[in-house]
Length: 118
Length: 109
Image (cartoon, rainbow over all chains, first blue to last red):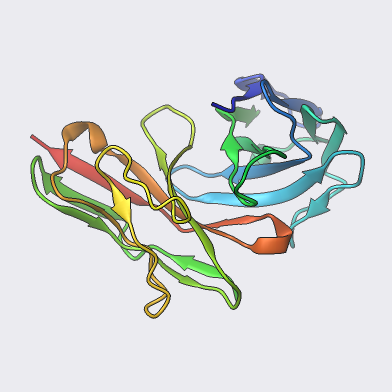
């Protein structure tokens, strides 16, 4: 089956620093990847849609200058949390859509990255 | 507005009992619906999609357009079914998935 990896699985950083999270599709090409945020015991909140070779589309209320997304290849998207603050601490999950999938909407999820900002 | 509603935060049953996790949606177009499951400390994984009309791990879900529902059912719950279940709506041209709040299923021995 389609596998999505994320790196790192967890990261602790100081307030004011930037953190980069990678999302890779390991055995398929993903023209579209998605970044979600999940708070404890809550559902996934879509932050942005990342399209290979073009600018990301951000959901309402998500600061694009704070959460920089780059989708430079068909297998890699990165999320950079710039000038991180404690309120950015969360679980960040990426997903990818297989361009060959019969389902237009099916997504495959990464294991998530736990970010803690001190 | 596109919305997915899972009215129950927690569903607690005994092993062998039937299970129904409710999901209602609001969508003006032709919906594509999914059930995702998240076991403890594991990633979100696809359980069912309505277009496949399949049964996975004994679970089934039927799309009822009249009632705008996509309830997940299993006749006999097992302890290993304990997990978070999310209903999701595929929003067509935007490729986005809209998730419900999730229902935690707890199956007791």
